[in-house]
Image (cartoon, rainbow, N blue to C red):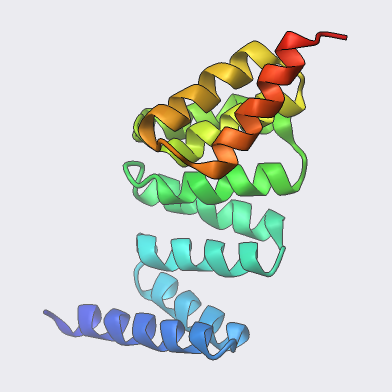
Length: 161
């Protein structure tokens, strides 16, 4: 491991400790330093997205998710945060247009399928909602959240208004 890699590892460790201590400004400073050293450090972008999402600063979290996806398009975790950002903003149209890209990254991710199904349900597109919620349950049988959402969708399909 070279000196730069050791420095980055140290900053990541400090940032993780600061997060655990709820010293988020300090954690952000550590991660910003890593990004300054290595602008392609996925871990720093992802951790920043997590911190800002937890702080309900969705616009900033969104930007860090997008950057993490650019750096490592194969990692599905930024898509999970983005899905939750879209739901928190009640931006179901964006969820419906964007989450399939995350599903392409990991077609077996039940959470993304649940978030997409939930978004379709909120838009009252119950057939699509049912499809994605059933897919989520095929991957993660017994998931209570997906089961409850599917029950609501099935009731809506059985009693159209």
